[in-house]
Image (cartoon, rainbow, N blue to C red; front, side, top):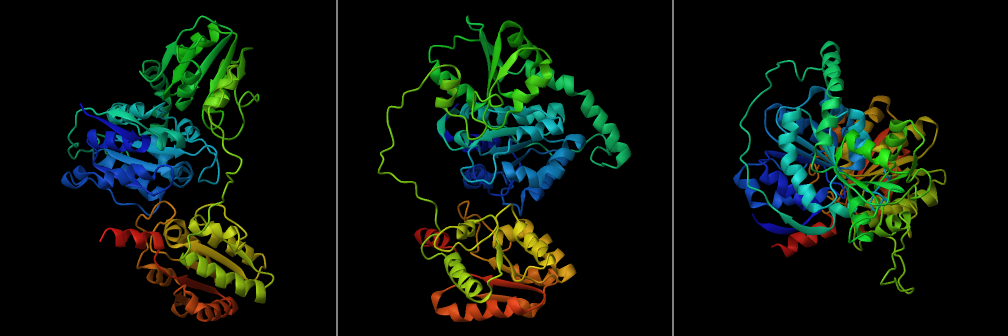
Length: 530
């Protein structure tokens, strides 16, 4: 057995490789991106012919992974928490179809919104879907859960949701490997209708899923990832979920004085939970994210035991869990050994010097502010979202992947002119194309700027699904070829760009402007690697 210093993301990836993975399916999104990148960079990926290409979005990733499972092989799906929203249609139905080959869905949550639009907690998806879930407290557990999780998925006949958080995904620890397993052979379900969710069959399969809930609870009660540790002081019982257990132990290096129920697998282990409740006067729930366990516990008990956590203000209702916040919750106070010097100022992120988005925004804002005072610009998720900040102050919205085009359409439907959408090339193929089809079908009066840097830049320069095909995609959707305009965003081309913007705003219909220049970070990496 070998041991490596690995990020949580890398531990997940290595475990999948060691467990006989046949394919990873993902769309890049922090903090999940490094899982797929690690698999892509591994020498065994090529020798074993493991699928490792980026998908167009999380929905296509989830569906392709389910297709690999259908064929009996082991698949891994990786996404950040907001990607779960995109994948949810297939994810929830996959709980009803079940799986053949083991399938693990990794949802990387981002409490404190380090690089996200919300703090949603993916455990609610697992609970909603009625499938087993894992939540590791450290990198070794993340490895073990994935390595053993494929077998567990096959035994249960269900996909397994693995929920991690940013701090675990992006911190390192020593991880011990287990023996490498071969890939599964091609195999199919004994039930030829397993994956056919016509209503009559879906109702039958859903009843089976409901009937198996007690079995899932029993596996949680017997899981090595759920552990009851007794303590002499029964005034408080602590439920510590995932990384919250590590934070708790930082305050009690010699062992906690209170009984602790460590949670790493869901559904909640009923037997251990009731033991904690029966023996303790109050319950404290430590969980990173939203009060998922706390809410369940309050409804679960139906009795007068006080449950403390995020809902009663013992812990903050927003932001990530920290060792300090956990220490305060148990009546301790961690003293910081180091303080941040007062001269250190927070610097907001900014577009790179020389970025093509800068030139695009410089020209766009100049034309709009000087000539179209009633304009609004609807933006999207990507590097170009930084156009909201100085010196541009160029955009009026940023909501979710693909929303720029459809919000611009809705505003145009309401009578706004000009309604301008700014979207990146990768986000466009992720979820902007369907919005463009709506625009074409109704000949909406919108101007769409697809700022093309030929990569998925915000998450580190992964391949973009539409590179080299944006014009043909737009034309295939139905945009008139003469209103698909490509420009090169450079200072020498500013006057040409201004004229193109004016002409397309004045056009009463759907127009697409594509400012195209390769991301300077990607270009620099290419030069370094030559």
